[in-house]
Length: 305
Image: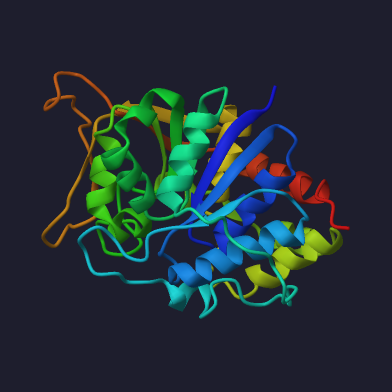
């Protein structure tokens, strides 16, 4: 049985890895890809999503979304992902077109027209999702859960307190976490452990044209660490396929929307402030060897005509 998913993203190099796996794994039925300003501006994230759909010759609609956060000024991550967001590989010039609807409208229509509930996988700022929930709260009952890359229980990667996706639009994050929809938080606590090792990167480069494409853009990812490079967003897809790789804890997550800690995801670790209630399953650990083996096999199975 396939899992119906919608990917809401800001490609971005690690988004590209997540999209590539989702488009090619037969356990997923990708109903829609929506884009948002984040790693780069939304015109670039949209084009990058179209590039990937065209590269793999998939018939998945792409809808362009929010150009800026709800309130906070926009700040991209081009210093990490390059000016285009996905440099390093020569994609076809023609990549197709987006659907006529905005991301929010496309999300609404896709969710409500689906005969089964869907899972939403956000790997960028949560602006589109917040707008959807604010305008069409009736969709909540049609969403199985949200498996979101973002947040951190400890140190951030945008500030000492905040992870990039949540920092980009903390007001949207607060709306999402207060929605009542089941949420899995895949944050830096696992994604900074799930490093693709140099050996994995070397192997990926040998795995056909899909491997060549991914390895080429990975080379331009300016976030190297000792032991490898993080592929933050692909952990959402890995979690959906292999939750047994991850250790999780249930917490209530609050979002800081102002001040020097803006964008921080604050966990009520003592259960002291919400009467013992929780609003998120938070990933805190991962088997990194399994993650690397899994990623290699996913790329090995990708077919490019």
